[in-house]
Each structure stands twice: as C-alpha cells, then as structure tokens.
Amino acid sequence: MAFWLRCMACGKKYPSQEIRYQCDCGGLLDVEHDLEALRDVVSKELFDERLGERDLPYASGVWRYKELILPVDDDQIVSQPEGNTNLYRCRRLSEWVGVDELYLKHEGGNPTGSFKDRGMTVGVTQAKRLGCRAVACASTGNTSASMAAYAALAGLSAIVFIPEGKVAFGKLSQALAYGAKTLQVKGDFDDAMKLVRRVCDELPIYLLNSLNPFRLEGQKSIVFELIQQLDWRTPDWIVLPAGNLGNISAFGKAIHELCELGLIERPPRLAAIQARGANPFYRSFLTGFKHRERIEAHTLATAIRIGDPVSYPRAVRAIHWTDGLVAEVTDQEIIDAKAQVDAAGIGCEPASASSVAGVKKLVEEGAIGKGERVVALLTGHLLKDPEVTVRYHLGELEGLTATYANRPLTIEPTLEAVREILEEEG
Ligand code: F0G
Image 1: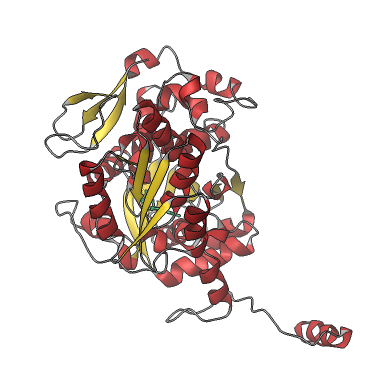
Image 2 (image 1 turned 90 degrees about the vertical axis):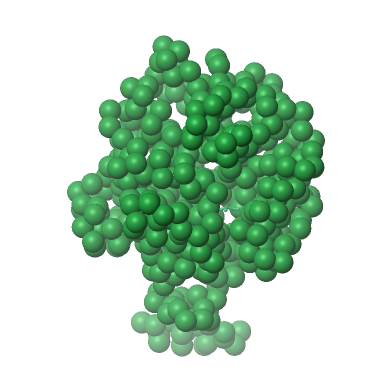
C-alpha cells in the first residue's frame, strides 16, 4: 500500500522516506494514503476479525487498523502493544453532565498512562525505518514519558525538553525512569517547543512532537477504536481536551477518512475543550478563525498549558470537516469534573477532565442535546498528577474551592477513635 507526505497548504508531495516536518512553503504535512485503493481492502469485518488477536501487530489497538495508519512490514513495528482502552458507560456521570448516553474513552489505560502511546508507536516505528538513532520532543509531560518508553523499547536515545517546574511529578518520574536525557528548560512549553524545533533542524535527531505527521496517524486509532466499540454506530459528539492541537487534528483526519471510505455514514461532531487560561484556539474560534491567537498560558491542568499550538491549521480543518466547535472551561470546572470522574471509580488527570467539564457546559448552553450520544475522551491516568489530587482534597489549591473534597483524617491507633469517627459521619 502506498503512502506519502502532502502539504496541507500548497499540496506539494514528498516521499515518506524523507526526514521533514514541514513543507518548503512552511505548511504542515499530512501522511496521505491511497484511499481509492484502500476502499477494496479495508472493511468493518476485517477490523472485527482482528479483535481478540494475541500476537502483534493486530493485538495492538493501533496496528489493528494498520492499513489506515502506516502499512509497513510487521517486523518494522515498535509496539508495546498499546490501545484497546476501555469505553466506560457511567450512569452517575451521565446524570452529572446531563446526557442520557455518555461514554468515556479512557486513554489512561495505555502502557505509559496516556493517549500519546498511540502516536508514539507509529512515530518511533517511522524513526527506525528512517535509520534515526536519536529522538526528541518538547513536552508538558505525557509526550516525554511516552517517547522515553518507546525509545527504550526500540533502542534509540531520547532527549526530552520540558518546562522547568511545570511538569506533573508522575510524568517527570517516567521520563527519568525510562532513561531519557531530561532537559528542564527555563521557560514554558512554547519556549521548549521552539528550542526543540531548532535542535532537530540542526542536529541528526528526529522530532517526535505532534508536528510530526506520523504521530497523528497513530492517534487516529482512538476514533477508529471507539467507533468499533460502539459496533460502528457513530456518536453524535466526540469531546476532547485541546492543547497543542495534535489530537483534534488526528481525530478530524480519522473521521474524514472513515467517511471517504464509507465505513461510517455521517461524521460525528468534534468539540475541542480548552482551559480558560490556555485558550488560544477558543479565541481564534470566536473570530471565525480569521485570526490565529497566541497567548501566554496559565492553568492548573499543566498538560494543556500551551499558548501557541503548533497544529493550529490542521485543527481548524478538523473543526470545519466535522461541523465542530471549540469551548473553554475554568480551572474550577476542570477540577470539579475531575473529582466527579475520580469519585465514579474511573479517575483521570486534570487536563483530561476538561472534556467532561466541557460536555456539562455544552449541555447547559444547549449546544449538546440531552438525547445525543456523546463520547468524552479521558486523555491521561489519575496517577499522572497525584499532587493536584491530594491538594484538592486537602483544600490547598490556591483560589479554587474543593467542592467535592474527601479529606483524610488523622486518628489515634484505637478502636474507640475509629468508632467516634464512624458515629460522627453517621
Ligand atoms: N490531555 C493530556 C493529558 C495531554 O497530555 C495533552 C497534551 C492533551 C490533553 C492535549 O492534546 O496537545 O494533542 O491537543 N500533552 C502534550 C505533552 C502537549 O507534551 O504531553 P493535544
């Protein structure tokens, strides 16, 4: 099966073996597949037959859709495996957000605890195919954790650029533990991103941020998998957190390709949710995308603390393709939604909960109907950021209310003390 790179701005084509992240004109690149030829090859039945495979590549929830992702020889694939994440249906959360049919696609179930593994299995596979020996990324934490793990698996050296003091502890510990050279940049994510782009232009190091179109091919599998889990019934909405805008771009491309291939009849609508303090995409949306906004970002959801997202043009296209929309939620709304997801026994990291907070808000505003089928994406695991969780329950998050606090209690080591507490609480 053939695939190549194509500039989304000027249409110029490049061979897939070329190391490049942007077109000569500055436009962003897509991996393009021969959809005409694929129409005779892929089907729902083919993907359903592969469910339950124990061996790689099809045991992976990414490589199950190999023809639509990266049709390479099986022995080239670097996979943990990843994907096959749960699609939860939770009555308590449905009631809280106000829709009858709410599903939570939990990408925290991936090997390193976030959706990044789906892109990284493809990005690192491509790095090996290109003969690269070192890979790099800028990251708010999850990309670096994932890249470090997949580089270790593939025997490549990994260099991560993270904003100093702004990365949740679980993620920083992963980058160190998996053996990546970890560079803490004095600045924010946007500074780290600029730096790593220069580094990868000048040095023989392969860039694995979502600017790299191969990453996005892997992340498309989230959409493929959740629709397959719904027995190929298309949801009305897919709602997801948006930071650097890689994932929303991947989702738009996945939906576009499924429609082109006739695997679904109508596109689900995408809703991208940003934190109010890190909302450049929302601000651009309000101008009808006439202006590309850039800001200095601040939010307690450090994963999406991004002011100048690199995939902006691809994300605008995704919103247009799917008749989608962009919304913003406050840190208070994010942290309360997280407390609800956590208390349902599911759990997620702060940025992830912005999708659930977003559904609630869009239902209240009337954009999402109570009777619509909604999938909210949970992007990362609860244990990624234990500090925010504990500080919330202790009521120690500055400027925020611990609406659903579950405070720990300290007691004497006596049965009497336990009795007293249980009686107090009734
Ligand atoms: N949720 C989580 C948990 C993330 O880690 C990220 C991005 C997003 C949502 C937003 O996805 O960037 O594709 O719009 N994390 C990146 C990182 C930036 O470095 O780990 P996006």
